[in-house]
Image (cartoon, rainbow, N blue to C red):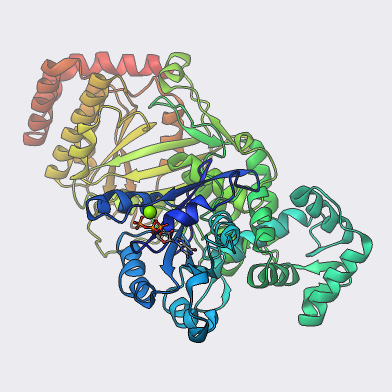
Length: 621
Ligand SMILES: Nc1nc2c(ncn2[C@@H]2O[C@H](COP(=O)(O)OP(=O)(O)OP(=O)(O)O)[C@@H](O)[C@H]2O)c(=O)[nH]1
Ligand SMILES: [Mg+2]
């Protein structure tokens, strides 16, 4: 794509071309104080000496627009644009627009004159980065000013991000941005801009209202070309788009760029990344949407739920995000992260869960998308940073609305099944091995009628644990860790070892997390024995007994409720590893519990287990 200015304080115009074509003379002939819409212009002459090739390449890569020169009296210099200069710019990945300047027009033999259009048309067709061609003469001070005028305009108001030369249509990104602007200006949400709304828009973008006859003229132009562009309520969204297509294709292109910039768009036609100051977070803090943002999302949900069935169908969701550069949820980790109905629709809970997940994982992206869909408030009013978890532990209560739960467990233990269960997916026999990316699932958990929390499950594959342990802050974002095992002995052993590793890591790094164990079973009968053993070990280390669930039967045993309640009390269920020594004891305990389920083992550890049980109870009180 051509023409994306990086948006610095100065527009850099770089002049390049064959030796002796008149670059230096052109630069000297440029008006002395060049400004374009308040932005100063810096013109950079380049050298034709071979030893300066690299330096020239660097200048070209920094350029906001490039002037390529040829000499009107030397046709080979024009040919060199096609064979050398334009391909060279592409090779250097120069994205800036190009202005071709035919210098020394005064030396052109009058008998040889061919029209500029005839010469340039094939070139412009082959290289869409060429925005304009001008013939000039520095000697006669003819059209030199125009060369730089076009160079500035092309840099400040590039065509390519807004208009696709090949298809001769507005780019999808431009259409989406204009749709959002239309929605923001349509205050009464009646699908059309009334005269008053058009005026408010005009004042916001151009600091001056339209005169009544100007409004009429605008509407007339639109109506003449596109009958659905205007209705009895005013200018429709199609009419608004048509008007801008007209500005872009026939000029003034600045009009559309001015509008886009006023509404916060940058040269990529995206909202500028610096919507709010960078968030400074401790590893054990998280980001959530504020009530203000959630209220807005609830309203938007109803607005786009055209058939009022309390579900946003995929096409309604697509419409909702039609004013964003693209739908944020079509890719991982959001794609399959929440509950969907049979036709792929989202309930309000699922919709808000997706937002909660996005805000937790990528707050800036989340706020950006809120703005794209028309959040009217200040960006910083949409999110809040939660209290540090170590403070929550001291206060013995977490105030978070969104709780992140890391799911650990050996391969095939049932981690994915648990995630599926959380988002209402039916149990499936099919086994999909874990990928490198962590998978997420998010849903609402009703603790009580007033207390509604979002739970975010993050599945961490057995292989992913090493990576996690290598990062000192990795448990900062974890509100609770759940260790899954199935009914096989080895599964319980691996799961317990994982628990010990994670608990040790938490202790070493200062990010201790509550831990729970879950025994996933594929049917109802069986493993009461195993549960007895695992209960004993759990109690020994000071965490609650394993929660048995059978995902196959859809019986989650209220498990998500229990996970959230445990996460709300971050001072409880912290395993007592008491340093490496106890860790070893703990491993021995697991090994032995697996070897013999005997009274002997219970007696041998009876005292400490009893002691711990009392401690667990006291903490729970
Ligand atoms: N007649 C006429 N001569 C010109 C014009 N522009 C430049 N010249 C002459 O052409 C020669 C080369 O001009 P420069 O401006 O130095 O060309 P350049 O591209 O900077 O050359 P290098 O930096 O050496 O590559 C000089 O003798 C200029 O006087 C013009 O518009 N008309
Ligand atoms: Mg020179």
